[in-house]
Image 1 (cartoon, rainbow, N blue to C red):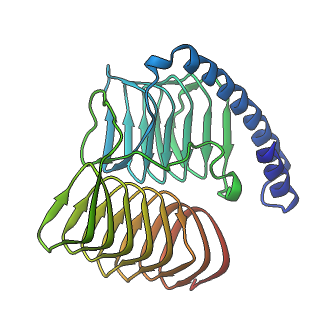
Image 2: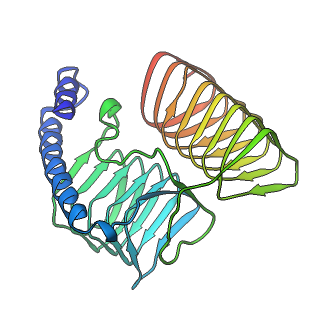
Length: 312
């Protein structure tokens, strides 16, 4: 009921049309029904339920004849599905080439899509994306919203990207067995220029300074300075500085102050911050902040901000 209320509020504010509101409300009801059926199925087959994961990185491929057990969630990456996904497939701020089969729902936000036929047994929920090619068969119905107003509705069709992020540095093949991540703790973690620190563990530190390259799971620190490159899961830090030509690729970001210098870039899921000073580029799912200012470029599925002082 909360999601339907948000749709009606968006309609009242003129953010969506009456036709879009009708489609969204119908989709909400269908999703609630599907969620109930999925819970019942998982309770009956508890031992066979696969964990869902978010994949970050360059390319995720399900080849022809290949079967992936579980859900696939991709943020800021390229996805090619020619085989079978026995779950949902969600793509945010990325690229999708599809000619295979998805047993669950296909959820796409702010992405470029090339259809090459195939079949989706669940529903197709597509928001603010560019499509081309030959559409697949969709058995569960299609919800298509052309604008990215979303705001409180941004998470309606997508599962939250809050934990268990996997780094993708190449093609994905086969079935993964996921376990709870271990945590490495530091007072100060420094990755020197020309060096790479790579781990599948979470990292907790008072201070993290990266001049080289850091690859890890979730990252929690009081102060984060990036002069090189980081690929990781969720980031929680009081202060984040991405210096000139620095690169941050991650899941969700939670911070008080975030500074993105000119020529620096951030590709992530959602951002929750107090102040963002942007002179570089941010590509994110949904951005929630008190103040954002600067001369940089913001590519986002939606923004909630008390003061937007970005120069146009």
